[in-house]
Amino acid sequence: MRFELLAFITAFATTSAQAVVGTAYGYGAGATGGGSAAAVTPSTNEELASLLADDTPRVILLTKTFDFTGKTATGAGCDKKTCSAVSNGGQFYLGDLSCGGSDMTPVSSITYDAAGPDALPVGSNKSILGVGGKGVLKGKGLSIQKNANNVIVQGVEFTTINPQIVWGGDALDLQGGNSKIWIDHNKFSLTGRMFVVSHYEGSAATLSNNEFDGVTTTSAVCNGDHYWTIMMIGKNEKWTLDKNYFHNVSGRAPKLGQDGVNSYFHAINNYFENMNGHAFDAYTGSNSLIEGNAFVAVTQPSTDHAATVSTFVSQGGNACSAAFGRACLTNSVDGGSGKLASGTSTGFISKLGKIDVPNVLDASKVAAHVKGNFGPKNLGAAALAAPTTPATPIEAPTTPSEPATTPEAPVVPNEPAAPAPIAVAPPAGAAKLYAQCGGSGFTGPTSCEAPATCVKMNDWYSQCINSSSKFRRALGRYF
Image (cartoon, rainbow, N blue to C red; front, side):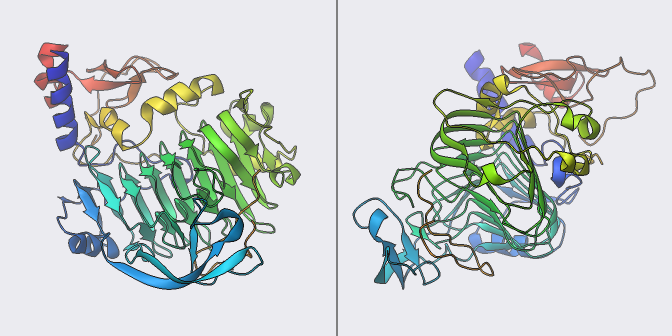
């Protein structure tokens, strides 16, 4: 019976996940994507590209692998002597932006997949939704165009974008001036350069419940871990990073700001594991609140440079009370990890505003929660009762060379639809219809507003389901 139920749930999740699951929050708050636009399901690469590019509100369902690989090209570049793509499991560097310095040797012809360097342009008002864990972009990433806003990318896997070549393409880039951006429950792997990058004109966005999988055979630091993880270096960047899973990455996980550029970051309840390199790399001007994160076997939870930044704040205490009505959470660093530095200039926290995240966890509960909820494969439980329209939003090793997508300057290498109103007031603290009401590590309300009841989906997630809903009736014999 359990297997029959599982099969039914999987099928139901696949067919019902035709809308955004949950509500954008943090610096990505207000994102509705395509809103209530009729869902469209592209079948070809060309159709997908066309649907993404304009500013027309669209809900785009990805139900298959869109494979852009197969057409190769060649170009000149260079190889790093101390971490060679030829002999040491390193990466080639395409073009000449990273080819200065005595450690780099010219290479006249590098073969790469032609699709990788040119990502798919994405305009405003888009919900890009992977369905049932089947939405995969292979060989080409997404580029949210300059000043585009209101974009949601959820449940999508990005993979195989020239992993052996720096400058071979980014998985997801924001061209700048972007707002209301929510990147949730995606997986990033096997990418030549950045998994996520925001350029010189800053953006406001939330990264949540994503997996950053750095396992690779072509590493910029020749240690089997991907180096180019996340880079946010624009003017007045505003990012929330919540409950993401970083593993087997060795650098820029994430890189926060650049010297002299003002920016704001809130990193909370992320899980970092098996990292032979550094996690946070912060620069002067970055106002960074790092709280409730967990580090297991991470060589450098923060870089030496981050230790010099007074506004890189990672200690617990009362500095968060005015902004969030709670104390700042203490981070957890295991005995197999290095030191997590912390500054003492906490005044910027009051400027973060009301951007706290839902379901705030003590660091001791982060590993279990994140590993039970990250990426496309774990979006299904939350999607079981998803409405057909989106919910209304509620207001270290030696640093390798520094590729940065144009227009960045190069650096020399070596571095439910809402339920109908209920006449009777709900009990205090009751969760709303379709909200989470339980699961390992969950600290919110465990009762639901009538007529909904709290239904366990798995050990990590329970949800308020209407007892008269289609889903409940369909599964009635199991409850």
